[in-house]
Amino acid sequence: SDIQNIQDVRSLIRFIPDFPQKGILFQDIFPVFQNPKAVEFLINHIVDHITSTIKEKIDVVVGLESRGFLFAPIVALKLNSAFAPVRKEGKLPGNTINAEYKKEYGVDTFEMQEDAIKQNQNIIIIDDLIATGGTADAAGRLVKKLGGKVLEYIFVIELTELEGCKKLDAPVFSIFK
Ligand code: PRP
Ligand code: MG
Image 1 (cartoon, rainbow, N blue to C red):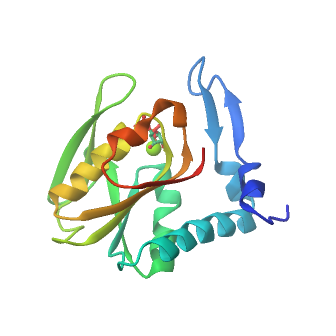
Image 2: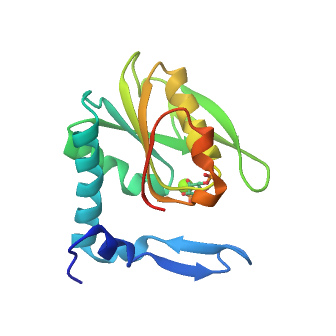
């Protein structure tokens, strides 16, 4: 239960075969959240990376529904930045903008509230995992539509063989590859 390094956090990620469907090996991050020291280590790892490599003030940390919400608000708090959610269609009240992206079956729509980002603000986008990159790319398009500048995409897990990063037009930091 004692967490000394980032590999100790990695060892808490659980692999579940055939979830949510046959043939998929699901990487379950919730065991990490059973250990507050591991969560603290992971969050500090992300925050230290940002503060040591990005000199601009981060105005808004954007988190992607739903598992991006586990990380982005805490990182935002530690950076003294705002947090803004990207949500699936129909979940956000008020004026919203949207972007479509391809999932394994069919097309999905992401939305942001129009006032979540102001012109020229510096943005970081956080999600738990990048696979094909379609999800993160749609979030990036929303941020840009609102006039924000994506300084970096951050993922806890990257499935490197799918080369999702190639879809993205800003630097990517992923903790576990
Ligand atoms: C998973 C994961 C990422 C996305 C990555 O989310 O949390 O958001 O897939 O896939 P991609 O890179 O191929 O686009 P999912 O759509 O399963 O929804 P959830 O986070 O709400 O569980
Ligand atoms: Mg997701």
